[in-house]
Length: 207
Image (cartoon, rainbow, N blue to C red; front, side, top):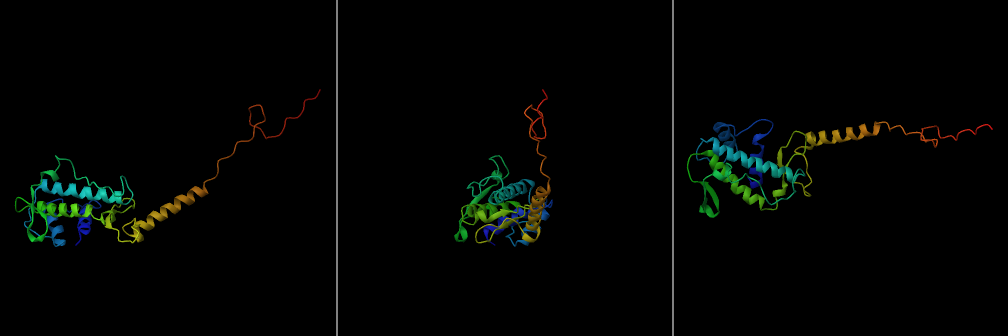
């Protein structure tokens, strides 16, 4: 799984009211589905809050990449202030295995393990050329995060058959509704006295 794919999977754990980080069991089930390394299954509310902060950061960046608020390719990825949950994670660098990674200083907290993996993926992805391909669907009330694999990076919706068609239908209806709207009645030309008239010259007075 690429860094971008991991980040999209994280971003979509809180879609349509569901939250796969709501409790330790839900988080463990989601992480097992990704075949992620497991050092424990328990997790504290604090470390899950850090993961939710990271999730929110990815979703906000994905929205910007698809033309929502903010620059399309901003180098900064907000992950909360220095007092936030992410800053409270106790992580240390690990140089084993031939590549740099982060590992929690403690053992047995799954959310901390996942956050360490996500942070490394986020740092690598945000510095790479494919980061702007991580996008959030522009469909109304959707926001599903995906990796845009199109050649010209022009994909806007998670699925053309659903969100794309709904957006195009809404645009079509709005355009035709405007075309059917009657033009405003035009005022009649004045008669030179400040009153609206028929535009005809007044008849001469008899002498």
